[in-house]
Length: 474
Ligand code: GBH
Image (cartoon, rainbow, N blue to C red):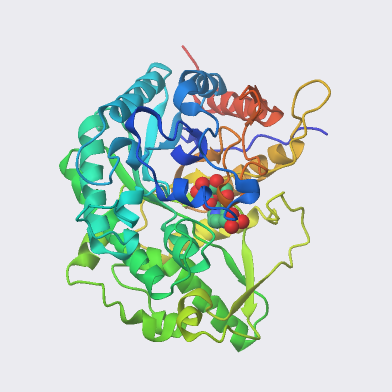
């Protein structure tokens, strides 16, 4: 197959790769790290594919030098990774763990020495377990994201991180995909903490937003450089233009997108909440002043994009009214896309990314510059007899999505950078280690790292971009 053309992005556009702490670090009980809700969840039988856990993962905690070497050779401008809150503050609040703090010092210094700008996510789903369920004998209340105290604990953690690393971190991302933390965690139950509770999911959504707002305040007062948040905004297509399907689209828009974008970018709670959640939308946990904190101006919006969805009105809804209102909003997902699907089962539809970016740009006059903080594909990645991984489908996926970003830029959307998910194959949450998203292959027996063809392609693309856009030397 002839490799696809390199997309043409503007001069100064930044390229990167992304990871998250629990998915790559391993060393789950090393050097004073406390447990997170993902340790508990992954160790609970039946929660992850084949009982996979992040105990060892890619052992990045011990191999970070090699991984930064891979990033340096790849030629990226930016590396997005997350800090493990329970590595830094093992009980969630209270004393910090010096050896945890040292680890990210070493990682950040190694990145800077390689000429790579750190983009740090504070929360990529690994809540300290003690904030969910306090250890016996403790006076803490627990309750995780259902309670306001967790947002306050998050602000303390943000202040600690900013004080320690703020001089060297170019971009701060408060939360990764709060939709997943709130609804996949507390309504669908497929992520930690793994409950199906309706009201708790909506309370979690609010406290996550509040945590973001308080963290922005803490980061700003510590003099942080750029501050933003990462959302998994869905591009939602309607199955038909029947009124009931269009109403289903509206409910899905509220659940997946407007719960986040309206308070963050529009200064209001989502319109249509009551159509979506009925009486549960009373928002009893909201306090005056919260909205102003949540809507503080951002330096950038991070967008994670993988695939669009098509929705229709569901024929039947769950009979349990408690669950029905939060878990089941009367929507079914269809897949009319006659395209290739990745091993996640996701259709490959790059123009949906252009649509999504254009739509954000037209809807929110206050939209800050956008960064694509994740985009990538899981593929079969069979190791060929030559010992390499010839992942041509991933190369096509990345090329076509970068071209979709270039289209959005040409149509006036201010997109500044792009991160591939992911640098390494890693722990894909409930899907365990079967799904491989990396530019670099991991052999989970030896933990050997082998760059795939897509790594070489991305490297070539970055080199070509620089050659095309940089001023010729005189
Ligand atoms: C992102 O989530 C995450 O930020 C990242 O950590 C992740 O590795 C990446 O995408 C790829 O998935 O496990 O079958 O119950 C994207 C949204 C939401 C997709 C949860 C997978 C779980 C389905 N993800 N969903 S399952």
